[in-house]
Amino acid sequence: MAEFVAFEPQVEVLGQSMLSALAGMGEEATVYLAHYDLGDIQPEEWYRNQDWLDFFKAVSSKESNAMFDLVSIGMKIPENAMFPPQIDSISSALLSTDVAYHMNHRNGEIGHYTATVTGENSIDMVCKNPYPCLFDYGLIYGLVRRFRPENVRFVVQHDDDAPCRQKGADSCTYHISWG
Image 1 (cartoon, one colour):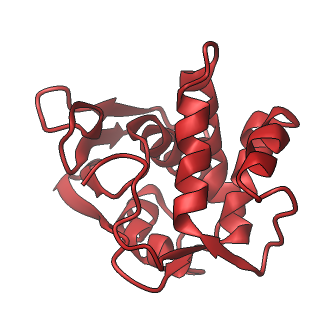
Image 2: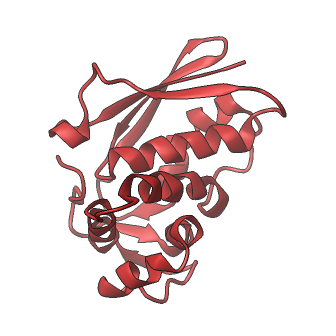
């Protein structure tokens, strides 16, 4: 498995979650989206996952701001994608990430987000999917920020000693703590 390659060609992604690109990058995203026939995303429509991944690959290849754009798009996912309604805490948000991921994708193998509680205020997240590592960092950061109690500090840290998709691995691991 590699970044930017759908696990199966028939996989689709819900437009509602794709609107995070516009929210994260602004009008600059429209040029990239249009190049992949994604210029008029409708929230209730389904789109080829590979086209969406091609968009991410193009953004990641930008000469400037690529890292910021990928993180920013990820941070907007919790504001745009469908999530289970019972989420009301950092723990429930992180433990429901895989459910939400599957609510926004369909038609085949899409990968997984596996959350493991490691302490009272800490969770490890293994992201095994075709999305860029920096996008997942932003997604996790945005999720924790959205569901944290006011004034609670948190840390999202990429595990540089674990396998990483940027280095050809199947997954990336993040350590999340708060309190």
